[in-house]
Image 1 (cartoon, helix red, strand yellow):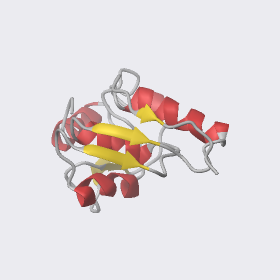
Image 2 (cartoon, one colour; image 1 turned 180 degrees about the vertical axis):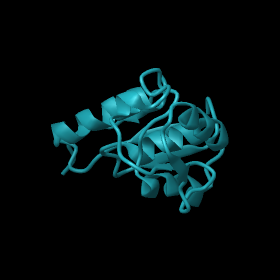
Image 3 (cartoon, one colour; image 1 turned 45 degrees about the horizontal axis):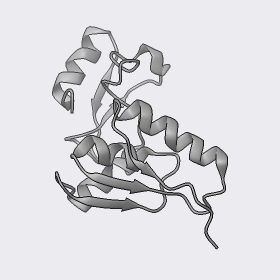
Image 4 (cartoon, helix red, strand yellow; image 1 turned 30 degrees about the horizontal axis):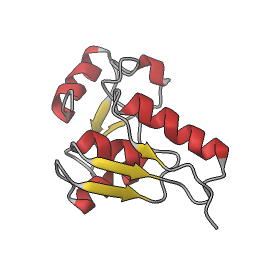
Length: 130
């Protein structure tokens, strides 16, 4: 929540990057007309924005998350939904992946949450259950 769609579209225009509001999530998502390396996105390295699938962003809107809620994301890797939920509201979120012994996907989840949420932490379940 460091910027909004209109503000970031202006930043992209200043950087000569062509982008539009994503019609599936016009209040939260932007689609680039041409793919570029994330390093070229203004503010990406500083955590100002994150790159997510528009479908993942729909989860927060469909759940109607708001500050103070407790949310369980039981299918949380690679972390797009988890990150967007944390970016959307000040929530208490527990995220996990089944099977949790999939170390590569748990690693993705940790990295996604650490970058995309600019320092917010999710409680990450990393226990194998049978």
